[in-house]
Length: 300
Image 1 (spheres, rainbow, N blue to C red):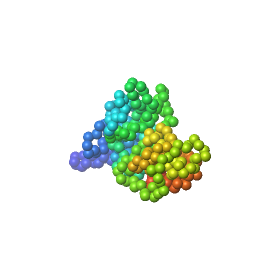
Image 2 (cartoon, rainbow, N blue to C red):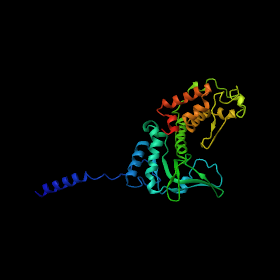
Image 3 (spheres, rainbow, N blue to C red):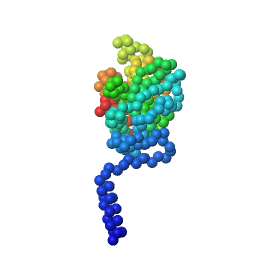
Image 4 (cartoon, rainbow, N blue to C red):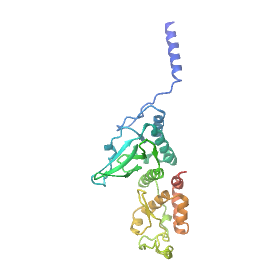
């Protein structure tokens, strides 16, 4: 009789427990993580863990030392280091929304998770210090050894300052695309190179309205403006060697498409048939992979 009572009690206890929210269980990892994960037990942490399980990348938002942010394959800045601050607790959810809606939603997990970094650090007010001088804010860092970092500026009151949403979005997307190209997932079609001359000099005729459709003008030749890999600015192409480097012509198109809105690209290049043909070729390459480059640029 006592045994039956115990069984009934345990069964009842188990039934009651089913109505409680299950605790977050640490995700199994093959090798040791630099951070405890998950970093909390809130609904945001549940979303972060779901992202990790889907994309194999860990969103880390606290206890990130500056020494970790400075781990890079190559440090091209002498006497420099990167600093950042923790994301205010009430903004972590906003950051996770940004990562989901402005990066992950554009890239299918099963196809592309291999090309994401191990860690994506969420920080605020990230900047470089060179020779003691504080440099401008960095919305994204993608040259870490095993991480990227995403940063937005906050005011003294803790409010977000958001003029760099697009810059952050296209910088992260571009690095992912570079990883795909390097990994062999993206194949540049031979038709992209049809009619392109990488030997003849490009003349600096951009200030001469009479020569904007000359045989030597960069757009007439099928080239687009040179957008810096950091997306800080763009300039007319005047050095053919930039476009002649391995894969660089293709990547110049990728950067230009990301940097300009669809309307801006058409307004600037619509009268150059060779540019528009190559533009559509690039879009077709990514459409074939299920990636809409124009949508990433436009934020749709």
